[in-house]
Image (cartoon, rainbow, N blue to C red; front, side, top):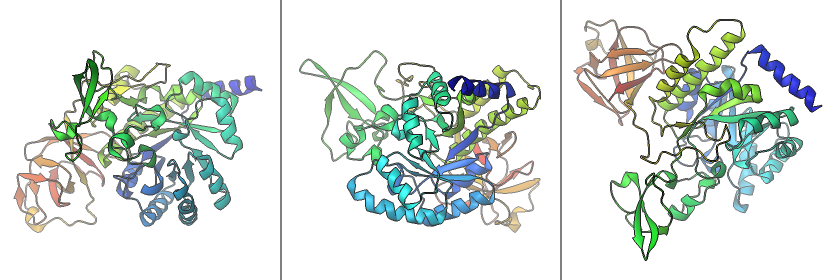
Length: 461
């Protein structure tokens, strides 16, 4: 039987046609819409109290309902996360929450706790259940167990290798396999981290991680022992993460690489989507519900382009350029989002992920400065129409932008538009030379060609 399934897997390799589903993160309704605009087939999101994302998560039941309705109208899907590490106090609330989700109608629920799985089957037996990566599924025996419990898709642990993915698929071909293909890597096994709770009393396993693995640490010597002192990047030299906390020293060994001792590079598997699909992966997921709409849009578009390219080649079309050139283009584009450097993680059997020991993030030469909000709901100010320019587009500024800046317009589908900022106007139509974010104001930018709504604008630093 295994042999037959293995042949079935190999036959898909020969077809060379990609059907991989692309799943993007959504921390709020705007990010959900951005993800779909830039090519996601589905998004994952959830209510803060139950979804491992307490902060930078603006969803409530009303906006989640709107998001599901928006997705279904466009033939897209929404997977709702219900994957916290559940304590007794959560059980009653989860049943109430499930009753509300049943009315909203997402396409699947993502769970990790066996008890929650049983509650889901009782309250909403017909819903599809996806097993969260937090459940740490790393082998075919576990995959078979979860499949027999009613799980239709397993989001594999990040620690699984490519060869292990192949074996799991061959052994349990009936269960769908999903994996993360891009985004932050936790220093702890599949996110089961206790450092945040210990250092700052914020539990990562309840969605409130303070990310101590990203902090900078300072080595000290005390009583002939090697110790470290917590030092946060955001504190600009302060020796504690909280001004009200005393200095904390913890015994720890420091190696020759420096002080960012737990700061993994970001996962990036954009060059290996074909290998993942051939191994049995049906869906690739992008991490980043706490990231900006800019991050969601840029990363989603890159992975969409790769998947579409694989589909085109599956139909017999020739590659326009060499794969090496395409990889460089994709990696350069991903590097225009803030990142910590890239790693393939554990995919090829490394004992550990590569670490960025020099800094909290890699240097990025670009900054997200705004997003196009669409001309249908914004009329051009009369006093701005007399300028000698072809078009004006309304932009909501997120950071800062100046006349003379070198910028790129990142459109949802298609190539970037490079330009230099010339004319800008405020909401009253008055010419301005600079604009700053944080106020929710709209400015008008003169451009050479029409650009669609949700176009992202970035400036060269």
